[in-house]
Image 1 (cartoon, rainbow over the protein chains, first blue to last red):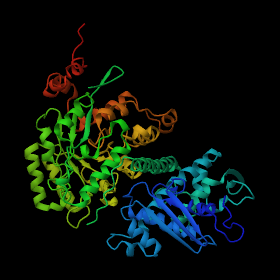
Image 2: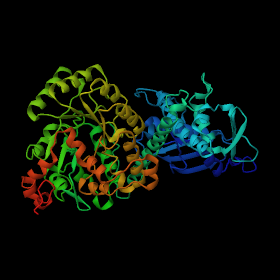
Image 3: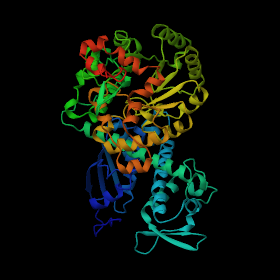
Image 4: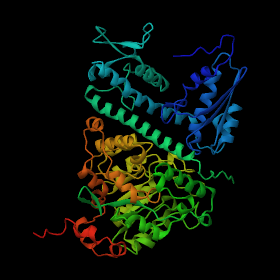
Length: 263
Length: 354
C-alpha cells in the first residue's frame, strides 16, 4: 500500500522515498531494487533527496545500471515535496559516467558516446520477458480460481474488475459476462502493468494473454504457452541467483580490490 | 572413477581449460578485467574452504590440473575448450596449443578441441585446417563475444561463419561449442545472445551445437531453440555449481532442461579452473529434485539420468567407448601416477569371477 508522501507539513519521509524506490525493478530480474537490497543510503535535506546504491557486480551492464538509476531518480522526484533527487551509484566500473549522466540529466548516448546502441530496445526486450513471466503468475491464479485454459485465452481487459472497494481481490467475468469469479488481484495487476509497458493492450487483438511472440493463444497451445511462461520466470530467478551469489562474493572481506585502471 | 552408492559413474568433464592470466601475459586492460570476473564467479560458487587465491588462479599449470582432475578420481576423461582472447593476452588466454601440453601427454584421457574466428577470413580457414591436421579435431569451441580490433563480436549465423561451419562439416569436425551464457567483463552482453544458434543449427543438421552455459541469462531462449532443433545440446558449465549454495534453483534449472531437451542432450562440465571437479562432481551427483519439482516437470534426476549427463552423452558425441576406456584405464599412465587401478579393476567391463 502506498505510504503518504507527506509527513504532515510538506516534509519528505524516508518511508515515502523507499516506497517510490520499491517501484523500480532490476530489469533483468523483474524484482524491486529495495527488495534486492541495492539501496545503501537515503539522505533527505528539505526538498532534496540523495540516494546511494550498489549493484551486485561492478561490471553489471551499463544499460541496466542506467535504467535503474534513472528510474530511481524519476520515482523519487515524482513525490510532490521533492524538488530534486540525486543518485550516487557506487562500486561500478562506469560509476563516473553514470552518476554524471543521471544527475546532469544527459541521455544515455550523451553519457556513453561509445555505446553501440540506445537503452530503449534493451528495456523493451526485458519488459517483454517480465511480461511473459508475470503472465505465468496471472494465469496460474486464474487456473487456481477454477478457470480452464479455453476461458483464460479468451479473456479481454474488459472482463477484469480490479478496483473493488477496499479489497485485494479482483473479479473476472467468464461465459460472456454470465459468471464472475473472484481472484487475488495482485498477479493480475502486475501482469497488466507489464502488458501496458510493452504496448500489448494497444494492438489489434483484444485478448489479454498472449504467446511469448505477442499473438493470441490458440486453446490447443495453452499448455505449451504455460510451460514457456514458466521457463521465463525460472530464467529470471536463475539469473537472480547468479547475481546474488556474485553480490555476496564481491562483498567478502578478504576480496582483492577491483581493477579500475583506466587506459 | 566416481562411485555413487556402489555404482561406477564414468565422468567426462566436457569443459576444461589450461589458462595463463599472469600479469606478464596481459596486454590489455580487458585481460585483467576478464580474469577478475572469472574469479568473482569462482568465489561466488565455490565452497569457502575450496577457494583458490587470485594468484593461484591466474596460472595453475599442467601438474596441478592433472592432480585436480585425477587426484581423487573425480574425472575419467576431459575435453579441452580453448578461449583465445589474443587481443587481451599476449600468448592467448587458453589456446589449443597451450591445452595440448597436457592433452598430448595423455591422449587417452583428453579430447582437444580447436576453434575458429570467421573474422580471420582465409587465414582463419587455414588455421582451422592446420589445427585439424595437427590434432585431428572432433570439435571446436567458439567465443562469439571475443574482441578483435574494433570488432566487439561476431554472429554464428553470419555468411562468414557459415563458411567455417561448412569447413567443419567437410573436415568431420562435428561438435560445435559456442559460449552462450553469462556476460564476462568487459565483453558485450549481446554478443553472448543465443539467438544466432537457431539458424546455424537448422542449416547444419550434420553438426551438433553444444551451447555452453545453457544460454544463462537467456535460458528461456535457449530451451525454446533446443526444443525445436534436435542437434542442439546444453553444456552445464556455470549451471552445475549452482548446486552448491542454491540447490533448489539448480533443481529448477535442471527440471526445465530435462523437460525441454531430455536426458540425452545435456553434458556436464566443470569449466575448470572456474570450478574444480574434485568437489563439483560430488555435489552434482548428490543433487536432487524436490518432490514438488518432480511433479511440476514430470522428470527424474536419478542415477541413470546423471550417468548420461556426467559422461555417456559426451561419449556419444565424441565416439568414446566407455567400456573399452575402463579397461584401458586399469593401467594407463594416469592410473599409475595416481594409484587409481582399484577404481577401474572392479568395473563392469570385467566378467564376474563366479
